[in-house]
Image (cartoon, rainbow, N blue to C red):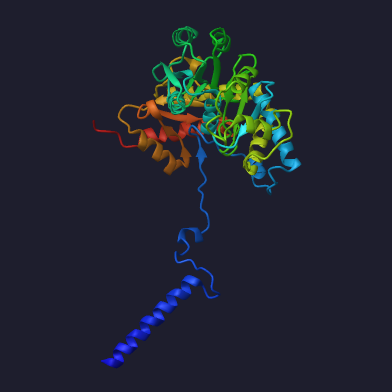
Length: 418
């Protein structure tokens, strides 16, 4: 008995010593006790898919190659030159000469937040035109900033007239009007002509979301007197998500200079970002480590748009959208946006056909055809299917491919018994 007890004590002491050794490591260093995850010890697996939803778009080889280049330092002269070229590309795409033009290090959501938090202070009144999810998101963000949010409402699938806007401006007297040019959740293209002039007559700035429309439908920032315009990299520009073009008019810049308080985000403070992007007269200073390879990709996306030309890009998107709409009607599907002129050329919406579950249609296309389209978003959930033809993906071949896949889905998907 005594011998067994001594042996047990020795084993316990040895086990404790072994545990301490593992914790210290063989050379007296700390040692990890959680093993490497097995899934990370396997090669990355990414399927090949045709992305014909509301974004992102497939990335062309030229932009993929740009994003795969070796890094530069974020303050290297060559990197600052790339940023200058991006700025020039955004000015062309936006059709603006605004000096305060740059790309936010983030997605279109990030640009929306940057626009609102730099323009608005607590107690400011903002009028938000809501006819889809992006108006809802803007109202949410503005409310979190302490602004007095007033909403102008339209049902999904409809747009705002100048009279709608004029009545809202006269009633609420906002310092900023937010409106979405390309409402990707419903497929609506918002007319912008006359809006800037109207806003300025009422002492308001015009803030426009063009994430889903830039390069796919005409937008002329200076001519249309838009004060703040932003977009994203992953739609018509066909670059990976992660960088977002944005530009501010002189009116908007002056409003930001009159702020009584600092913007609530250091990362998105336009004063700091303007300096980093060379938009003021001061030497450039470090603000944050930019997403270098995202900027390489964005630069190439803007270069490809410049080489094609805005007018040609607008026409290509218009023509392919027209072909798609014609083919959808021939399949017996109903377009969600009634007026042809109000249809967003980059993202087409059709009503979910009676007797079908939208989830089964989208899953069938993904599984059987390697092709993505999407259901609704926000107020359009359960009502529509959304088909995107943007940038690199806006081709007649892709129109034919998605129509063929939908024809197959309508024949083979299980119909509801209800």
